[in-house]
Length: 329
Image (tube, rainbow, N blue to C red; front, top):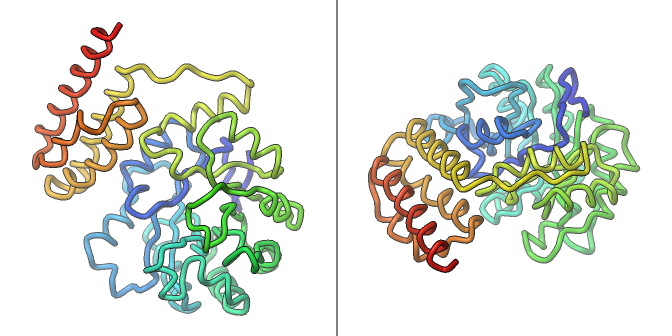
């Protein structure tokens, strides 16, 4: 349990913001399965782009359980301040600043983790955003730009001084992207350096790993990104393990089927038939890979163009996989 301003987060697991992944349907699903908080995928600070479908979808929080946390991305302090204030008007209860994204298209615009190279600019951004809104502001960072410039502790202290309410730290530099293994010693150093809550992020894909990372870092909770793709049950599994030391049973095939089809239907309802079927494709791949179902069993899914075809295909895939298991036994 930890606080973000006036909000008490009662579970130690948080869904990380991931562009193209943590949309409203996925956030709602993960919250229903134990995530204490779900941070939205990043919204650009360039408000002229907010009229696009992509931005409208990203800024839609209808029916979500609070507190609503919205991540903003950009490199101009005043633009980020305006974006923060406008998102609060649209319902954001927490603003998260992105200084962790390693994507080239983000870093090339002097945003995301590229900001960590310019500590003076970081300070200006933190001051501008915290002054612009009355809601809590959080910050997501990496350990630094590269192995030779790890400055997460410096930026963490700067963040606390500027009124940041919580830090999320990914245990890699920007140069690492998502390669190699995350390291947690820097996160531990950040936790020791500040008094605000700190979340540990990077390679947390099981209850045992979550417990180990919390033990190493002393962090207040874990932020889970790729570990939740196709496995939204990871939140309740980690929560249970941290609370009791007991592992819960893996979801049954029926539970997986029910959750998957419910998720696919929610995507179609949210995006409409055209975009819904396309976004559903990657989620199905993550779910089935996690169930040990080989790709050739669901490749035809990518050619389907309608919701009912996708649901029928999922039913066929599960029936076929169960028959294969029975025959093998």
